[in-house]
Structures are given as structure tokens and as C-alpha cells.
Image (cartoon, rainbow, N blue to C red; front, side, top):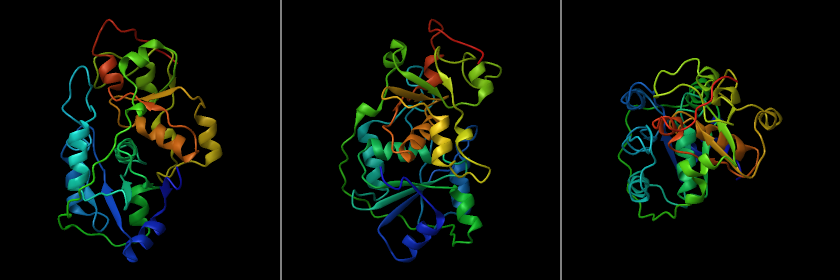
Length: 273
């Protein structure tokens, strides 16, 4: 994947020159489903559509699917058309959490849908504001497209795939949740046995920009059979995005993640480092 990350200067240039680009504002907050849309209404990159983590990037929560299940092909395809996205345009996604809530999820879903040119704004909303680029608080409704995406479900790992134990498991949650010291949301504390702790926040610097390729390569295991998970399949996409930045094969996403795994008390749980 080429130029997975772009900087604010590049996005500003694209918009100023009238390039065919759709911008998605994926800012979200885990404990407040309406916060992301409120932030978007207050101010956003000119022309940006809001990509709602809970309502548009996820389906209805369930024990089997976890807190943020993937929508169906039909649901997400309809949403892509409503945003006016076509295979011919560029798509740029941003949030204000270094990609973890929920720009990387939106990026991954567009890759899943087969879009050929989707990017994440490195540094996110902060980089745009710090660069003193224009903002707006109202965007016109986009003209819908007629794109019929072709989804690649090989990018998804099922709970059975995880349970087989033959893949490298990467856990993107904070270390204290991985170790089982604190679990504020899900039924059990700990992690899937054999998983490695790679907190999504550890892949970006204090400015919410991705670490250098050399630092990312050191942090991420390289394996053709890797699966990324987190609490509910959101920040796990940050690890997949980092692999794309490195030009590596993409790990599969376990969408249900810990919220689905821990919903069944018969599944094994590990604690500690």
C-alpha cells in the first residue's frame, strides 16, 4: 500500500487544488456515543463527512460480535455510497487519538471494501489545527455515489481462527488491561492466552504522529499469520495500519476482540505480562 499516511500539508494542497478527495472525520469517545458527532459539528476539515464509530463503522453490539461488530457488506456499502465515495476518489480519514479512535478502523473498513486509495492523516486533527489550515462547522450533504464495493473477508479472523492458537496474536489495549490489572468494560480481566501486548498508543509520539518505520518495525512482530485484537475491534486497526505503513502483509482483524472472547466464561483467560 502506497502513501498510507499523508501529512496536513498534502491534504491542504489536495483540497486547495480541488482534487477529488473525500475526507472522513472519525473522532469518537468510547464512553459517549454522541461525542464524536458533536466534535465534528463544532469544527472540522472543510467538506469532511462524519464517520460515526458506533453507528456507521459498527453494527449492533452482541455477545458473539462484541461491542463494535462489523456492519454487513450491504450496510457498509450503502454508507459508502451515502458519503459519495467512489473508487476513483482519494479518501482521507482522521481522528484526534493518533488513529486509534477511530480513523484506523475507518481506514481498515475501506481497505476491506476494496477501495484503492485510502489514507490516514498523520497527526490527525491536531496536525490540521496546528498548521492553521481552514476549518468549517457546516458541510453540505454529499452527492451519493453508485459504487458497489467488493469486500475481502480474508482480512477478518473469526473467533475459531483465534482459538486454534496457531497465529501470532497482537493485543492493542493498554498494558494494564492486557495484564488484567484493570478491566472497566468487559466481563473478564486479562488477555487471550499467547497474545503479545502492543498498545496502540505506543505506536505514535506525543504529537499523535506515527513513529519512524524503524521504531514501528521493532515494535511489531513480522509474521504472515498474525491477528490483531483489542477491546472491541477499534484500536486493533491501529496495529494493522502500522503494518501497512511498513509495507508488510496485513494482519487479520478479530472484530469481536476481547469483548466477544470474554463474553463466554468457558474460554481461557491469561493474566500478567
